[in-house]
Each structure stands twice: as C-alpha cells, then as structure tokens.
Length: 311
Image 1 (cartoon, rainbow, N blue to C red):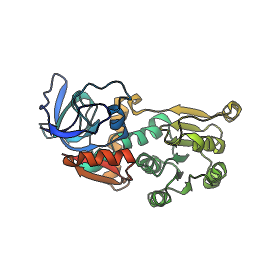
Image 2: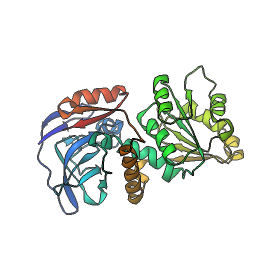
Image 3: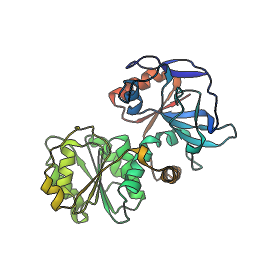
C-alpha cells in the first residue's frame, strides 16, 4: 500500500510502499479516507516521546471504513502502522462512530483537536449551563472549536482571546460574545475583565500558558477552573500562591489520553452531530497523501487551517 513512512529521527516522512496491515485478535483493518495532521506527529518523529522504532507509518488518528462498511474514527493505530496511509490497523474496541451527515475531512479534523476542546470543557472543567468561558488561544484550531463547543454546551458568555485579529473576528461570527487580542500592548487582566462584564469568568480553556494565563488568573471569578491544555506562549509562569488560595482557584491539567473511552464516544458523537447540523465549523485544508511533504512543512510552520491528508 501507499504510505507516508518515517525512516529516521527528525526527518520528514517519505511517500512509498509499506506492507499491508494484518489484524490480530481484537484489531480491525481500516480503509483510511481522511487523516489529521498534528504537532504530535512531528513531536513523535523528533523523539519527544521516546526513541521511535523506524521505519514506521506517520499519523496518529483518522477516519475510515471497516470491511463491513462501518464509518469510524480511529485513534492510536497499532505500530508500525499509522493513519497517513491507504490502510491501517487499530484496536476495534477504541473505534468511535460518526454522526450521519458529517463529511470525512471535517470528521478527521475534529479528532484529536475537536475532542480535546470538547472534553476539556465537559469532562475536565465540568462546564455547567449558564457559566462563562474564556478561551486562550482562540485563533488556533483547538481554540476555535472550544469557543463553539462552549456555546453548544450551554455557556452564557464566551470570550475568545488570541493573537490573530482576523481569526478572532471569525470566532465572533461563530458565537463568541467578546474577543481580546493578545499582544504586548494590551493590559490583559483589564481586557479580560471588560470582556467578561457582569458575567465574570467561570472556566478558562488555556492553550497558551505564560503571561496570558497569569492575566486570566488575575481576572477570573472566585472558584474558577483553569484548564491547562497547551503552552504555545511559554512553558512556565510565576504564580503568586496567595492569589491562588484567596480566590479558591483550580488549575486543572488536561490531556486527551486521560479521558475515559465512554466519555470520548459521547463527545465525538456530539461533536460530529453539531458539525453535521452546521453548529460547529472547523477551517480545514485537505491535501492528497502524495503531498505529505507539503503538509509536514506547513504543520511545522503553523498552518492557519487544520490540515487533513486524504489517501
């Protein structure tokens, strides 16, 4: 089969031939129709998660069909197989069903990215209807979905904060009640308070960390939950302990791998239903598998839209 194969650490994958996958007990072969492109894929290739065993097929998740015609989302293909190929093999118990009416490219784009946004709100933060939400990093793919997911889950007021004014305007079109541009000239604590108004800020979804996170923690309501999901602004902050204690703030870590399978099934079904109904949108750029080198480089530089490979 054709596949994007990694042969050495730090190098881009090469399009070539790879042995067809064979399913063992508890596994199923999936004909891949769309596969997400993530920073995670680049990090794995660089050895950030341990020394990889080469060669292997790149790609960590995707959408496809099983032999019986079932359309599924799959995660964590069985090594050395990945999702950037015509076929892969995955644990059958981990397959997630899609809602009718959502296309494969959108469904793949809502995999890791959409699930993280949805579950950070529903499963980790325990968002309740009527609460207010601040999304740090709303101009990114995950943040964009988080803004829409917060509204879908009943948030009364959603603030989108990010670096790109054009993408923040898009967030406003997709349901954000207020926006804040994150730059060096902005007094972020004051801007967050102004954007929140009388609603306050009950939940923060934070893909930035660094100074934006510290500013958010100064602006949130007492008892707020701050979900730490990424650190594209900085890896560290200097956090005054009294501020944390006196405001009864909760800082919650989040990784998608911690979410129970039943919660993932519910989240993905809800996500794809919302997408099928036009209530959640994600900006995508689909590229053929033959253009894997282009996709790799665009992801490395920071693509403005969610990249998806189609075998």
